[in-house]
Image (cartoon, rainbow, N blue to C red; front, top):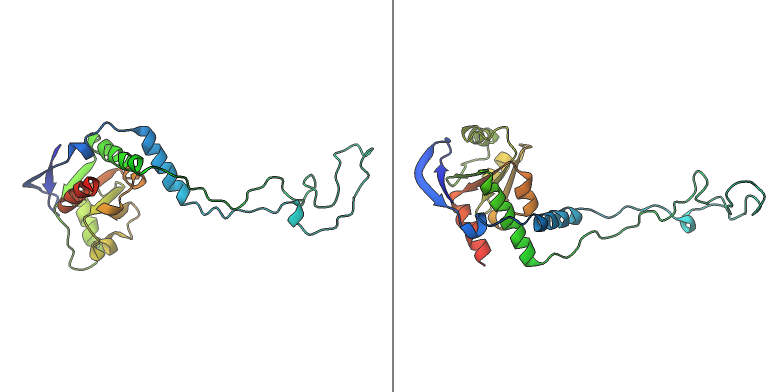
Length: 209
Protein backbone atom coordinates (compact mmCIF):
# COMPACT_ATOMS: atom_id res chain seq x y z
CA UNK A 1 0.00 0.00 0.00
CA UNK A 2 1.33 3.41 -0.98
CA UNK A 3 0.36 6.51 1.02
CA UNK A 4 1.06 10.18 0.56
CA UNK A 5 3.05 12.00 3.22
CA UNK A 6 1.58 15.15 4.77
CA UNK A 7 3.50 18.07 6.23
CA UNK A 8 2.65 19.75 9.52
CA UNK A 9 0.38 22.17 7.67
CA UNK A 10 -1.79 19.28 6.49
CA UNK A 11 -0.65 19.64 2.88
CA UNK A 12 0.17 16.69 0.67
CA UNK A 13 3.86 16.60 -0.22
CA UNK A 14 5.53 15.06 -3.25
CA UNK A 15 6.86 12.23 -1.11
CA UNK A 16 5.14 8.88 -0.75
CA UNK A 17 5.73 5.90 1.49
CA UNK A 18 5.05 2.24 0.81
CA UNK A 19 3.66 0.21 3.67
CA UNK A 20 5.01 -3.32 3.95
CA UNK A 21 2.29 -5.78 2.88
CA UNK A 22 3.66 -8.42 5.27
CA UNK A 23 2.84 -6.05 8.15
CA UNK A 24 0.00 -3.81 6.95
CA UNK A 25 -1.57 -6.10 4.35
CA UNK A 26 -2.15 -9.48 5.97
CA UNK A 27 -5.48 -11.22 6.57
CA UNK A 28 -6.43 -10.04 10.09
CA UNK A 29 -6.78 -12.72 12.73
CA UNK A 30 -9.51 -11.51 15.07
CA UNK A 31 -8.97 -14.26 17.62
CA UNK A 32 -5.33 -13.41 18.37
CA UNK A 33 -6.30 -9.72 18.55
CA UNK A 34 -8.85 -10.64 21.22
CA UNK A 35 -6.27 -12.74 23.08
CA UNK A 36 -3.64 -9.98 23.03
CA UNK A 37 -6.11 -7.31 24.18
CA UNK A 38 -7.40 -9.65 26.88
CA UNK A 39 -3.84 -10.24 28.14
CA UNK A 40 -3.06 -6.51 28.10
CA UNK A 41 -6.15 -5.67 30.16
CA UNK A 42 -5.58 -8.62 32.51
CA UNK A 43 -2.02 -7.46 33.19
CA UNK A 44 -3.35 -4.04 34.18
CA UNK A 45 -5.50 -5.51 36.95
CA UNK A 46 -4.03 -5.14 40.41
CA UNK A 47 -5.69 -8.24 41.78
CA UNK A 48 -5.65 -6.84 45.33
CA UNK A 49 -9.36 -7.42 46.01
CA UNK A 50 -10.03 -9.16 49.32
CA UNK A 51 -13.00 -9.99 51.55
CA UNK A 52 -12.85 -11.54 55.00
CA UNK A 53 -13.88 -15.15 55.37
CA UNK A 54 -15.41 -16.71 58.44
CA UNK A 55 -12.14 -17.50 60.22
CA UNK A 56 -10.86 -13.95 59.72
CA UNK A 57 -13.74 -12.06 61.38
CA UNK A 58 -13.58 -11.14 65.04
CA UNK A 59 -16.61 -12.14 67.07
CA UNK A 60 -17.90 -14.56 69.66
CA UNK A 61 -17.92 -18.24 68.77
CA UNK A 62 -20.91 -18.89 71.02
CA UNK A 63 -23.68 -20.79 69.25
CA UNK A 64 -26.57 -18.36 68.97
CA UNK A 65 -29.54 -20.73 68.63
CA UNK A 66 -30.07 -24.45 68.85
CA UNK A 67 -29.29 -26.60 65.84
CA UNK A 68 -32.85 -27.74 65.10
CA UNK A 69 -36.36 -26.56 65.70
CA UNK A 70 -35.86 -22.87 65.03
CA UNK A 71 -37.65 -22.87 61.72
CA UNK A 72 -34.82 -21.18 59.85
CA UNK A 73 -31.37 -21.85 58.53
CA UNK A 74 -29.00 -23.45 61.02
CA UNK A 75 -26.15 -21.23 62.09
CA UNK A 76 -23.37 -21.29 64.61
CA UNK A 77 -21.55 -18.17 65.77
CA UNK A 78 -22.20 -14.52 64.98
CA UNK A 79 -19.77 -14.64 62.02
CA UNK A 80 -22.10 -16.94 60.09
CA UNK A 81 -22.51 -15.90 56.43
CA UNK A 82 -26.31 -16.13 56.70
CA UNK A 83 -26.38 -13.22 59.17
CA UNK A 84 -26.14 -9.53 58.34
CA UNK A 85 -22.57 -8.44 59.02
CA UNK A 86 -21.30 -12.00 58.79
CA UNK A 87 -18.46 -13.33 56.70
CA UNK A 88 -18.64 -13.82 52.95
CA UNK A 89 -18.50 -17.29 51.46
CA UNK A 90 -15.93 -17.84 48.70
CA UNK A 91 -15.21 -14.11 48.41
CA UNK A 92 -12.51 -12.65 46.15
CA UNK A 93 -8.91 -13.24 47.18
CA UNK A 94 -5.69 -11.59 45.94
CA UNK A 95 -4.65 -13.20 42.68
CA UNK A 96 -2.68 -12.64 39.49
CA UNK A 97 -4.85 -12.32 36.38
CA UNK A 98 -2.11 -12.44 33.75
CA UNK A 99 -1.66 -15.42 31.42
CA UNK A 100 0.89 -16.60 28.92
CA UNK A 101 0.67 -15.66 25.24
CA UNK A 102 3.21 -16.84 22.71
CA UNK A 103 5.48 -14.27 21.07
CA UNK A 104 4.38 -15.28 17.58
CA UNK A 105 0.75 -14.74 18.55
CA UNK A 106 1.53 -11.26 19.90
CA UNK A 107 3.37 -10.36 16.68
CA UNK A 108 0.46 -11.68 14.59
CA UNK A 109 -1.98 -9.69 16.72
CA UNK A 110 -0.10 -6.42 16.15
CA UNK A 111 0.20 -7.08 12.43
CA UNK A 112 -3.52 -7.89 12.28
CA UNK A 113 -4.40 -4.66 14.10
CA UNK A 114 -2.19 -2.61 11.74
CA UNK A 115 -3.76 -4.35 8.74
CA UNK A 116 -7.25 -3.50 9.99
CA UNK A 117 -6.29 0.18 10.23
CA UNK A 118 -4.90 0.01 6.71
CA UNK A 119 -8.09 -1.61 5.40
CA UNK A 120 -10.15 1.09 7.09
CA UNK A 121 -7.98 3.86 5.58
CA UNK A 122 -7.30 5.02 9.13
CA UNK A 123 -3.54 5.51 8.72
CA UNK A 124 -2.04 8.97 8.16
CA UNK A 125 1.67 9.48 7.47
CA UNK A 126 3.26 12.84 8.30
CA UNK A 127 6.74 14.24 8.04
CA UNK A 128 9.01 13.80 11.05
CA UNK A 129 7.95 16.07 13.91
CA UNK A 130 10.40 18.21 15.82
CA UNK A 131 8.95 20.88 18.10
CA UNK A 132 11.38 23.50 19.35
CA UNK A 133 9.58 23.63 22.70
CA UNK A 134 6.60 21.90 24.36
CA UNK A 135 3.46 23.68 23.20
CA UNK A 136 0.01 22.11 23.24
CA UNK A 137 -1.32 24.80 20.92
CA UNK A 138 1.10 23.67 18.20
CA UNK A 139 -0.02 20.06 18.49
CA UNK A 140 -3.70 21.03 18.42
CA UNK A 141 -3.02 23.02 15.26
CA UNK A 142 -1.36 19.95 13.74
CA UNK A 143 -4.42 17.79 14.43
CA UNK A 144 -6.68 20.44 12.91
CA UNK A 145 -4.52 20.63 9.79
CA UNK A 146 -4.74 16.87 9.42
CA UNK A 147 -8.52 17.01 10.06
CA UNK A 148 -8.12 14.77 13.10
CA UNK A 149 -8.97 17.29 15.82
CA UNK A 150 -12.10 15.51 17.06
CA UNK A 151 -10.82 11.96 16.61
CA UNK A 152 -9.08 9.62 19.01
CA UNK A 153 -5.61 9.14 17.60
CA UNK A 154 -2.36 7.34 18.31
CA UNK A 155 0.83 9.07 17.17
CA UNK A 156 3.73 6.68 16.64
CA UNK A 157 7.24 8.14 16.84
CA UNK A 158 10.49 6.37 15.86
CA UNK A 159 11.99 7.18 19.29
CA UNK A 160 11.31 9.23 22.41
CA UNK A 161 10.64 12.91 21.73
CA UNK A 162 10.09 14.87 24.93
CA UNK A 163 8.77 18.05 23.30
CA UNK A 164 6.16 16.19 21.25
CA UNK A 165 5.10 14.12 24.27
CA UNK A 166 4.74 17.14 26.53
CA UNK A 167 2.79 18.98 23.82
CA UNK A 168 0.21 16.21 23.56
CA UNK A 169 -0.09 14.74 27.06
CA UNK A 170 -2.89 17.13 28.12
CA UNK A 171 -5.09 16.17 25.17
CA UNK A 172 -7.55 13.45 26.25
CA UNK A 173 -7.98 11.94 22.78
CA UNK A 174 -4.28 11.74 21.91
CA UNK A 175 -1.85 8.97 22.81
CA UNK A 176 1.88 8.99 22.03
CA UNK A 177 3.95 5.83 21.58
CA UNK A 178 7.28 4.83 20.07
CA UNK A 179 7.44 2.21 17.34
CA UNK A 180 8.99 -0.31 19.74
CA UNK A 181 6.21 0.20 22.32
CA UNK A 182 3.09 -0.08 20.16
CA UNK A 183 0.64 -2.74 21.27
CA UNK A 184 -2.55 -4.25 19.92
CA UNK A 185 -4.79 -2.52 22.47
CA UNK A 186 -3.41 0.93 21.65
CA UNK A 187 -3.79 0.38 17.90
CA UNK A 188 -7.35 -0.90 18.15
CA UNK A 189 -8.37 1.75 20.68
CA UNK A 190 -7.65 4.69 18.35
CA UNK A 191 -9.78 5.93 15.48
CA UNK A 192 -6.77 7.14 13.46
CA UNK A 193 -3.19 5.90 13.47
CA UNK A 194 -0.69 8.68 12.73
CA UNK A 195 2.77 7.53 11.66
CA UNK A 196 5.78 9.72 11.05
CA UNK A 197 7.97 9.08 8.03
CA UNK A 198 10.72 7.55 10.17
CA UNK A 199 8.38 5.48 12.31
CA UNK A 200 7.25 3.52 9.23
CA UNK A 201 10.83 2.35 8.73
CA UNK A 202 11.15 1.69 12.47
CA UNK A 203 8.07 -0.55 12.40
CA UNK A 204 9.51 -2.45 9.45
CA UNK A 205 12.75 -3.04 11.34
CA UNK A 206 10.83 -4.03 14.47
CA UNK A 207 9.00 -6.89 12.78
CA UNK A 208 12.04 -8.02 10.80
CA UNK A 209 13.98 -8.58 14.05
